[in-house]
Length: 313
Image (cartoon, rainbow, N blue to C red):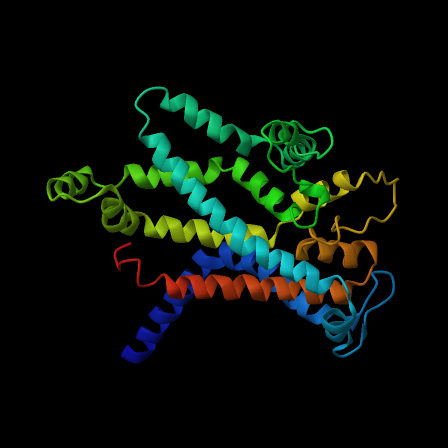
């Protein structure tokens, strides 16, 4: 009788726990588990959205990895942006945060000026950047030429298009600046004062006081930056399309990646294959590659940073 009562209590406790978790479980199932399982399912199907899916084994995987000429350039560009753009954004955001919190007067004005570009819609910001960096009529190249410096082709040059996209990402650094400012202001000032009395240099104080305190925020910025870059779609597509000068009509296909596939990313590939070429099976393969890369980067970053973050962080 006692055993039965204990089992009943445990069962009721388990049901109560499931009931409290049910909103999250429903959301997880509908918006993550079901789309993920469906994507895996369609990656082994021949499906164009009009006729019923037909199993075709690993043909979609073979086609994407060995025959589809845009996959490897898109993968290289995406990895380049993950390494360079995310690294530059974290370093630049931290630098701007350190600078702004040390400004004695007019700090609010500078914070507003640095944050405002982040509020600009991605399409409008990209259009403005393409016109500013126009190699023929843009003011940036005019200034560089007047100073006797070389004027790059920016979005019309395959060697400069990705650095130009990185510059666009640095321009909208306001989100990281605010996050780093909050973390920097939370570092105990007593530790800086003690270090100064001991004769520690500015770099030493940053290395041994500031960085250990803000390391969880740095990790957060890097992980979310990697995930955002894995979804990088609008800016490179708009920049490539505007810089190409091609005006497409309604329903007309546009091959992304101008110039010479240098702005092509994996999310653009998913849209191009799935919604312009109606090959949902191959699009599912590219989407799964994106998911696998995101998980790989996140796991590696979490494991590598575990020694930097204390157990209480």
